[in-house]
Image 1 (cartoon, rainbow, N blue to C red):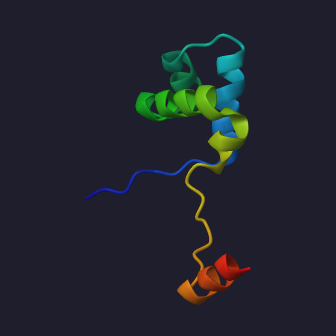
Image 2 (spheres, one colour):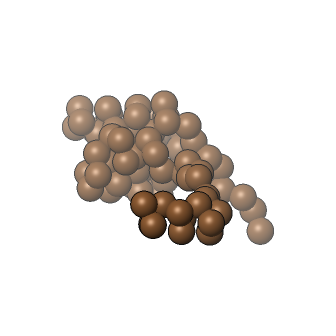
Length: 75
């Protein structure tokens, strides 16, 4: 199984900027050298949740132990 390449927030932001300027997905993919499907997904995410949601994609989130979750729930 091949691992999909990960792209940094700068690349995703550049794609969003080009989209805002009126470029299409295929044009953006060719300009920044990223596969069409990746850019298509970024544009859809950008349109749905904005730039913050786009740049947060793929980040690992903190996993809390069960005990901390229970303590937080008890207040």
